[in-house]
Amino acid sequence: MKYEQLRKKEKSMMSEQEKACNDKITQLEGSLKKKKKDDKTFSILRKTLGSFLESTSDEEFPPDD
View 1 (tube, helix red, strand yellow):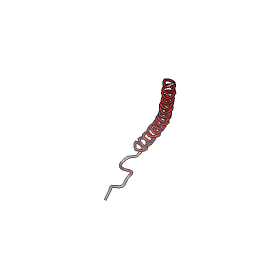
View 2 (cartoon, helix red, strand yellow):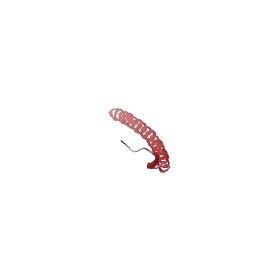
View 3 (tube, helix red, strand yellow):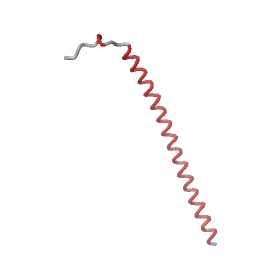
View 4 (cartoon, helix red, strand yellow):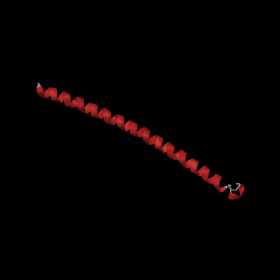
């Protein structure tokens, strides 16, 4: 009888741990997708800024007073 109770308790604990791990994996996958999206956005911004800065020269801006 006690053995069966321990088994049920272990199974329950394992189920909880498995659910917690799956939740964490889902959270990390979402975080990774967001990071990749942010990296792509930053890369596009850098390229845009780079091409903008290359197309202008210091002569186009008045000197600072």
